[in-house]
Amino acid sequence: MAHAAAAVSAGQLPDEWFVSILNDRWRLGACLRSQQVRDALLGDAAQTESQAQAVREDIIQNTLSPAYQSALRVLERQANDFLDDREGINHVDRQKFLALRPRLHQYAVTQHKALLWSLGHSDFDPIKGRDVAAEWADYVGYACGGRGDRIFSQRVTTPLGEWFGALIDDTEEYLITLLADDVLPVMNRTLRAVALEAEELPAQTRVNSAGGNIS
Image (cartoon, rainbow, N blue to C red; front, side, top):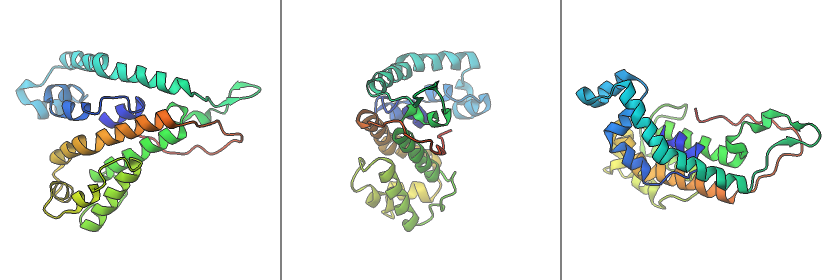
């Protein structure tokens, strides 16, 4: 959910938002659509659906909408819609990319794959040893365009380190905390930088746009 919001807003969310929402179980619980999962997270303090909707509306109004508005201003400056020269909007296959920006879209997809891999929900090799942990850390670096901590791979593969323990021992709750603290803000900054730097022109010939998605 948090990364999808970062992708759709082209990295315009505050970098500290990921940690803040994770540490606020009331707001986090409201983002869960399932009442059963919400009850499991918050127990007797769980919101009703109407209460949760009110919290979600507050999150949208105060955080998500401003970020999306900023994204529109950033992307509109260099917008290059995929238009047919003679027939107006055509060949919608070219418009499957996030905000019509293939490079931005591909970064978002790669980041999503990195997150799924860390949580064991992908076709990548399970992270059960230092070799695969190092591969995952390098993949995160690739997904962030090299903008992360230069010693991130070392931190991830240190046998007694917090990252290695969270990845190897399947302690998902603590792993999510680490991702929110160390990885998601860098992914957000990467999307923001790519949105600002990109100058992608529409293709001159029809191309296959099968690039995956982040859903």
